[in-house]
Image 1: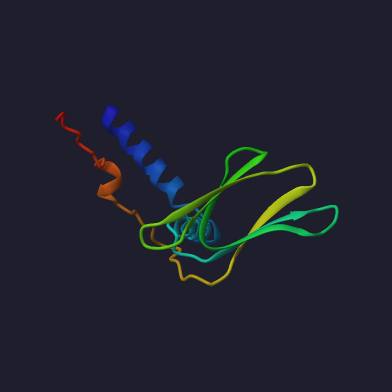
Image 2: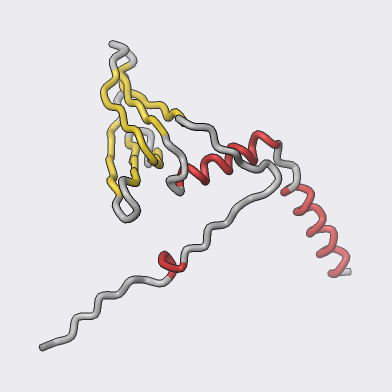
Length: 129
């Protein structure tokens, strides 16, 4: 009986995973590429009252809405260098992100990035003299 319930549960889970629309899969894949600094973006902060741009950031940038009032933007400036900007959002200042180039992504496959350098820490050993 347990085996039948397990089989039914696995079939239901597989059916639910396979129900994503192509647009959802492509959107997730584009977000994944942007978060891995593979896409050029323009992130604009503008004043909704005056219509003026307050700040524009362009490059291989990922952003995260930390809260309703704070946004972190991290940009890759070289192979080993990054810059992070934290911005506060007010009642009349908001932002939008624009993808500058198209990127071919699959709507059928997902991608997993395995980075051992993130899992294995870089340890600095200091020995007493």
